[in-house]
Image (cartoon, rainbow, N blue to C red):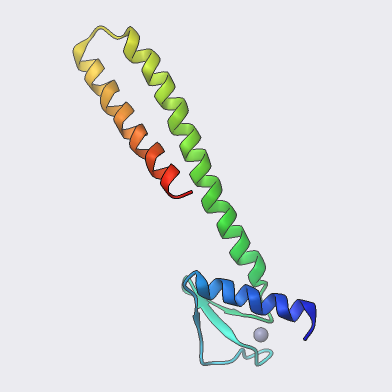
Length: 112
Ligand SMILES: [Zn+2]
């Protein structure tokens, strides 16, 4: 077995681990194994599975990190606004927003 073939099989295994299902039907082009992942049918020979799985992981982590950072920046800004705010209605709105962002921050920490 060549290195690239080993790689392809481990990529397919990785996709299956993420919820892809192995199809009974073989690929029309090469007769290779096919997997179904997020409503897409992929051949482990014809399609670059390593690309698909790695891109998705990077995106989820990136969005998660960015969202966490954004929530933190917003909380800091809202904290400043709240400390200067005299109007009780506005304070309530700012405080609620802070709680919302803290919730987001908490959730992004958990998914890491
Ligand atoms: Zn194929």
